[in-house]
Length: 367
Image 1 (cartoon, rainbow, N blue to C red):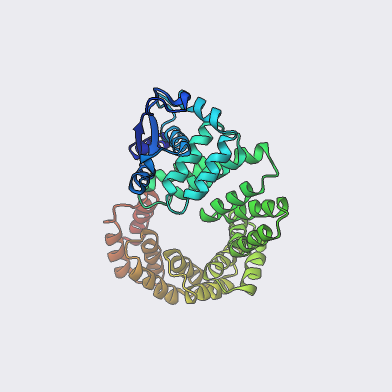
Image 2 (cartoon, one colour):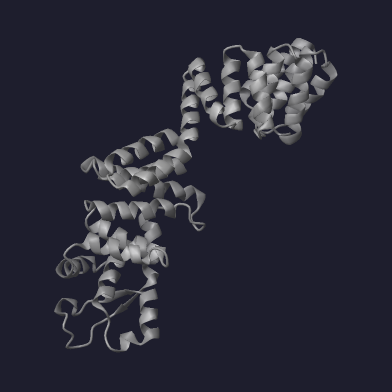
């Protein structure tokens, strides 16, 4: 699906009328005039349309029509009408979208999209459209595979805004919100800090600070993960112990354990894994990696106990099953290891590496 495909579905939200003869708006003669169906329903119900139809509703309808289908037959004529009656199309669209946002978010996004199509350089309207666009990705009616389309376009628009206007604080703020929502906390923190530097409003500054406080621990953990990925384990340990001095987070304990494991400090690693599991790090990697540290610290029996606990929760985990076999064989539990090899070979998702290693083990132990 493309964005054009998605928004074109909204054409059925429009009804079309023609002006009566003698109407005072000559530019509208002979044009099918779009009106948003919700507005038409309200006008008919209130009796307002018996007297006249508000020009503003027609102008909104034209913008919505352009937003729904940028290639619509009458868009050129609609654009001429909008330019004639509106001093600033972007400002009109943004103002009307703000009024509609809570009650009718579909109307709001179509208004801002229409104005964006006509003038993508209007910073505030472009920001308004991007803000509505990325949140639409999380609508329950949007398929999982289509979510990225909305988020990527919103990111592109906001980046475009700050590339031409580096002082547009709310665009930085919105980029921070998007990246925080995506779990990319370092990027989010960077954009929030830019927003903080670009705004003079005390209220806005405090709101940005609140956002920074919300994501700071996550950003610190993301930075620690980056250090681990670069094999800079000592710096990661310093970063993670700093986080844990402020808040006891299971994921921070887990990553701390991984860092210790990678520099061969198995006892520290084991303590950190224990704290991670106590704190709720109940995921397969925690059991698997904890067992590895125990095994490397010559605690094979305990390693086997932990990996069995993990396999009770995640019986289809091939990597954990493979590590269990290695521990069993190292402890002389040949029959148990043989049974587990036969069982593991029935898994559909085995990697070539595990298959080859199992064959080597079978040959080595004559099983």
